[in-house]
Image (cartoon, rainbow, N blue to C red; front, side, top):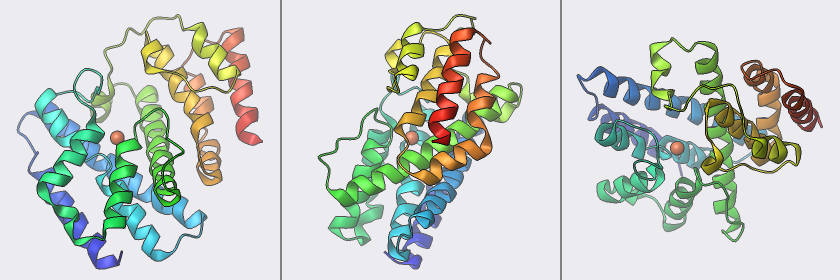
Length: 257
Ligand SMILES: [Fe+2]
């Protein structure tokens, strides 16, 4: 890929997202939120890619994956007024459908198109199938790290500034009750990923987000999570119980090793 193609994709993307701008303040907040998320994910993927010494062509390809990874979010929020995939539709599939309908990727080679589509398809799945071709896997890992890095950033902002309107779209409707699931505590101590289906309240959701630490692919991402202090910042908003303090210590030592 070359720079002019990425520039053209970026212009196309902002025309596309503008077509979803709305007078309805709730919709408009959701659309702007995802535009800004996309910008930050593009920056993250670029920084991770540079840490791996990727070629310029691969950095452009990674940038394109990041630019389009949440394309489905704009239609999803406009149609359903929700970003909850389980209650609406899988936004990765919605994005792939939009890419197909608009034909925006048609200028790219078959290999480039396959990489972009595969990376988008698996960016929000719990597990990444290791049977994918090696280059597809690399770009899928890049977008998963870049995306998680920004989701952690956004949730920390939301947890620490809960009244900021820009983050109102992150409200989950989950009860903000003091208990938390022992399944998550055990999974986190055993360095296992957690399942959305076990989330019963806000604390569980925070623990689920913390379990992503075990699903990070690149050193740069872990170092950035450590540098930003996301783990401690999330634990500061959880009950200060003995078992959660043990989980915090476990995660901090995992990340520093
Ligand atoms: Fe996404």
